[in-house]
Length: 392
Image 1 (cartoon, rainbow, N blue to C red):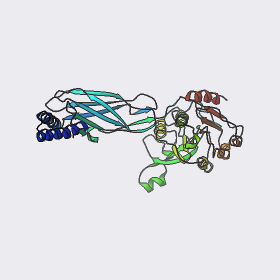
Image 2 (cartoon, rainbow, N blue to C red):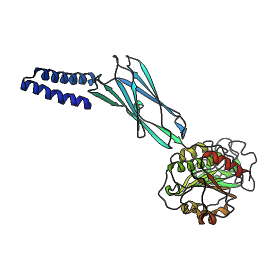
Image 3 (cartoon, helix red, strand yellow):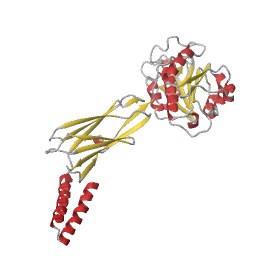
Image 4 (spheres, helix red, strand yellow):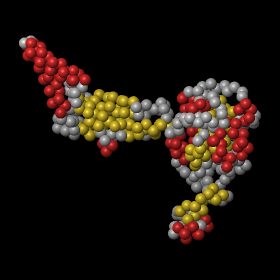
């Protein structure tokens, strides 16, 4: 296709050629003919598409917000002639990343490296790759879009930042040193679910009636309810936060609290103001990653009250630690915390925002004086306040 410069040369050349021959201006006709000849040469130059193979790599594919992530595209000239004037554009979300490619001889390979933006959480689509080849004068160009089979598309998952927090002790009895193996959370106190038999399971747990009905040997999964359970309520209302950065700090805080419990193989319940986000039973080695992956996709909501987040807690058999994370602005609905906090062994309210001071108000008095409130303006402030709360 012709570039804007190419279209200008074509129109101008045609006008000069016609005017030169019509009015007898030989110089104008020659100049117009030169413009037209340049356009023809540019079209011939770019008529044949470049024979290239492309391969993209993203390292790492999952990264914490603000950490470095790199993309690399390896181009190989699979044709028999040297390619010049190559430029490719890789879309990273809505951001175009443009890189110039040096001349590639037949069979030569070139790898282009570039940094990917990781300032905001989310699943960021990469691609498709658009390869442009232009003539030396920039009059014409040929664009090739690489499809998925050619490595043209990919994704980068930007997850919340976390700081390593201790797990708040709760309950009347727990394992002092935590689970000692991957199956240590399976106790003998409470029935949890039925699952298929795996080699090594205690045959005394076989549920023969279900096994006969399904034709598959089924065993009862028992969980130890004395394990510290952490419930995290994240207020995602846009009106609760002054800025987008305050909301990101709240998500980072929720991720840090949930990650601390999940990496110790303790059960975690993560709720938003619209309902459950994710529940883990503490038995999986990928629980911490699953929580971070899910929190990477959380967005602000248009709800006006956070009360709905506590409805499920009123109907459930709650215990352990309850951590509520909100902003420093609108607190509508947070008074519902007073209805459920007595179901838990301990309750903590975290107010995230650049303005660390939260004025007194009716919503704070309704929460009760025995509900600790941590006002955090940065993730480091959460770490300091959390350590103090852990030994309180």
